Length: 127
Image 1 (cartoon, rainbow, N blue to C red):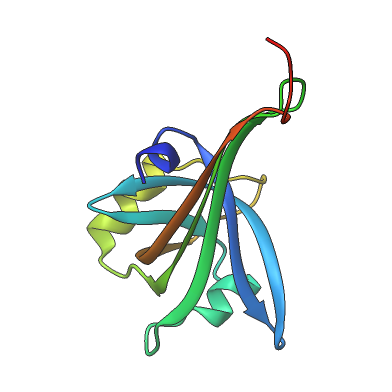
Image 2 (image 1 turned 135 degrees about the vertical axis):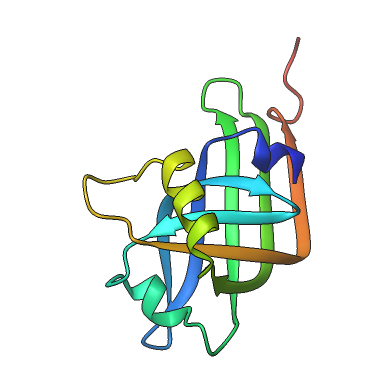
């Protein structure tokens, strides 16, 4: 989770019309949760509604394409909307939108599984 906290964006994976969907988003990690903003009219927000919790995955990474080194972390957990007006207002100030659109919804992902990998470069590479 610390690696995710140290990078500004990742990808949220959710189900859309019974198929996997992936969206890039900016995030922050706070109190053990991954917090993202989205639009109330987005497919993600339509999937994550106040009356239900939904299983999603969240992936973030930092990989150097030249050296093939870095890391990748995948979090699986339950997503739910944040509805407390004070928290929503706070996250709206902290998290900038990915696109130039009105991001009027905030979602929290509570991790249940966290898996990661460190990439150390190509096997057999001379250093």
